[in-house]
Amino acid sequence: MGKMGLFDLERHFAFYGAYHSDPVNVFLHMLFVWPLFFTALVLFYFTPSFFILPQIGLLPSGFNHTFLLNFGFLFTLIYSLFYVLLDKKAGCLAALLCFSCWVGSSFLASYLGFSLAWKVVLASQLFCWTGQFIGHGVFEKRAPALLDNLAQAFIMAPFFVLLEALQTTIGYEPYPGFSKNVKEKIGADIKEWHDKKQKKIS
Image (cartoon, rainbow, N blue to C red; front, side, top):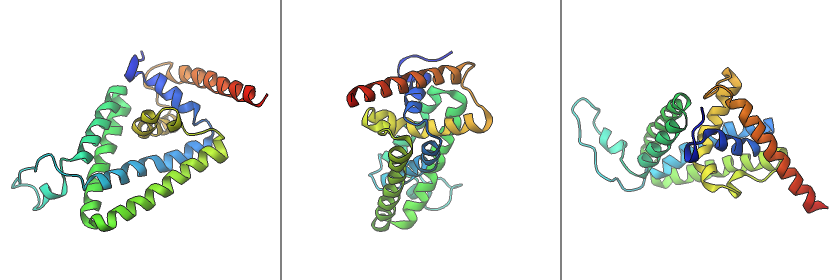
């Protein structure tokens, strides 16, 4: 059974799906959303630490200087907890990916240093966002969801592309009837959007 309010996965996923119904656009988002999350964490690595981890004997030297409890860690934790609350199974996988991105981005940022890292992040972000806007403008022919719901686009997009991939590859459903209900909501949303668009033209 679905959850209500903020954790209503069915409602959120239907909103997302209404803006991502074209298969090429969906594929482009699958390619680019997680790299956007990863490179954002690279930049967040350079924010101040809330406190320094104590050096533990069993851990490699410099461990506490590579993995910083700063905004990068905080956002990773918030995203991960939110995804788990949306759906335990897919959410746990998403949380694992989030923390894998945090670990990988910490190593990369520590290796590159700020003077080079911000240039890599800027180039990556521009490339990935361009790919997504092409997906919407050329294939979906509908403005991105971030223009209507900024929080949904930035916070939920990584989880939704993962859920989309799980549905496509293994037919995963958070609960029985989820896909059917979502398809109905998406169809209604797209029909409403087309009707509004037609009224503007006429």
